Image (cartoon, rainbow, N blue to C red; front, side, top):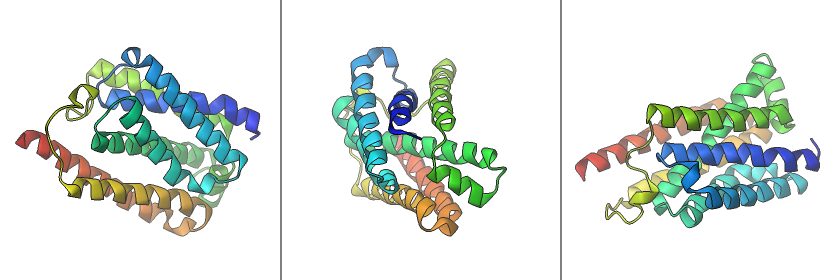
Length: 213
């Protein structure tokens, strides 16, 4: 893909991912139009710059952190919630990319890795549209994380450091997933499984904390 193509497709991708993040917290895009626009612009610039300087293997570190910072500083989520949502939307986008490329490659690992390393524009568009559809579906079904909401930003619930350690651990695994695509592909499936287990654990602990409060 050319830089022009990336400039055109990253805004669609990040619009879908940020909308999905808001839906996970039961928030509506209509209430956060300015914040959404600013966040999409910032993450699109970061993504395009990464492509231009050929630093895509660092996306697993840079993009989840950038998304989390947007949810914290722009959308005004609590820090822990911002980290959880930022990582969740990036992981959802990443898993969707792996799925679409696996289908396109006929579930052949080597071909799928080639597609992951050499982006297909349509895949990014599909991921963005898919997450916009998920945004609408979650709101229609009234689903989402009950313990995460921008309106709860000043709530007094305190999370122990264990939560942050787990969140940072998930960040490390996200980085390893991205790096494994380019350097250690044999570990990809194992890292995906470990990441999913850790993510489910942190959601369980968060819900339990909500019930205790």
